[in-house]
Structure formats: structure tokens, C-alpha cells
Image (tube, rainbow, N blue to C red; front, side, top):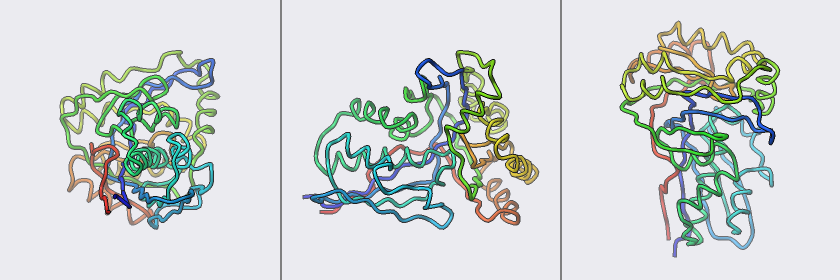
Length: 297
């Protein structure tokens, strides 16, 4: 009998994030292209007669931003499956940073708890449950590079011919995603009902050329994030001055990510930025979605 299962899930970068005007239900329609990158959270589950949740985190993760009660998305995932377990999360993905660390945890928990309790939930049903938990959770299950539509929860893999290298600069203070969307609405009262299509970005991915991808990166939430946190402009400028092909606010921010020409180029940019910023990480993509790392019986 399996007694411990560990599932790993990756952070995401939105290579294209087109945002439309809010729908009647309050959600913004999105047309986005996600890429899973090699920063990971691990979720470990064990059988238990009651629910428990604990957390460890890397030094660069603001663990105080992660609730350990019913507000945690992992608890909600367990509720949807109707199971209990002893759960431990180890976080490497910046919290409240626009890289979907919470969504990664939820996806990992769905896979781990399903396996632990031998529920044999179909992939299609797991994606449905993931969409109930949050817009980014289905992609965290799928991984790789994928296009997300609707509110981001309808995902389909796309052609990606490249191996892409990123430098990641987290912020010590998170940004509220609802606050960023509210600022987007204030700044863009004339936003179109339909979000911008990622056609140019999809062509760049298919080419496998870093310069083409750099030129096609887009984040419609970036002006709102920069309006709320003007100091992020300095981070973006510093990364590009250090040799990155392009800097971008990741999702709703405040993490800044920098596309580099290759692995050695990413390491050079990271070294340069470490003279000014406490935490600078490197990552590559695309990588796999939520997957089982270990099972012990």
C-alpha cells in the first residue's frame, strides 16, 4: 500500500496575456499563452484520519503570504475530491508573484490525492475540477506551452520549437491579482470585449528564435502592475541593460521575468542583477505539468 506520494508542479510565465473588458459575471476574458518553467513546488501527501496542512519554503519565498487554513487552495482541492490526508507543501515558486504558485499547488494536490486514495479520476474530470479551483490550475496540470482562453481555464497545447531561458526577479512584497485587474479596468475603460489574439507570439514560438519571441511578448496587465508598483520599471530596465532580450512583468506581478538568448546568457544576466537585487533565479522552459515524483509504500 502506498503511504507517501510527492507530486511536483511548475511555475508559469504568460508569454502573451491579452485581457478583454470584464464580462457580466465579473471575469475578464483572456487569450493567453502559458509556459511552464523550471521553478517548482512539491506537494507530499500521506494517509490520515483527519486533514492537516503544513508548509516549508525556500528563503526567497514569502511564506507568510501562504495561508494554512481553509483559504489555501490545496484545502479546497481536497474538499472537491472529498478526501482527507496529511499534506506538506514545499514552495520554491514566489508567492503572490504572478507565477501561479498557488495554482501549481492545487494541481499537484489533485494528482497526489487522487493517486493516494486510488480514485482513478479521469484526466477530463481532473481538468474540470481544476477549472473550479482557479483559472490557472488547468494549465498547471497540463504544463508545457499552451494557449488559454475563456478566463484562461480552457487550455490547448501549442507548437513550441524552442528551449527558452529566463531570469526571474521576485519582489519581497506581493501584489493582489484582483487589485491589478481593478487598476486595469480603471486605466482601460475602453478595453475591447475580446482580448488581443496571440498570433504573432504563436509564430515566434514555432520559429524557435529567441529574438522573435522577445519581440512578441505581451502582457496587458503590465501597465496596471507598473502603475501600482512604479519601482518595477527600474527592475525591467536593469535586466534589459544587463543583456536580457526582453523584460516583462509576470502575469499580474510583481515578479519580473527576462527572456535571454540561451543558458549562458541567462547566467550572465543573473550575475549582473545579483549586484542590485537580493533574489535572482534562473529557469528554463517549457517543462512538464504536475507529475508524480516519488511513491513510497
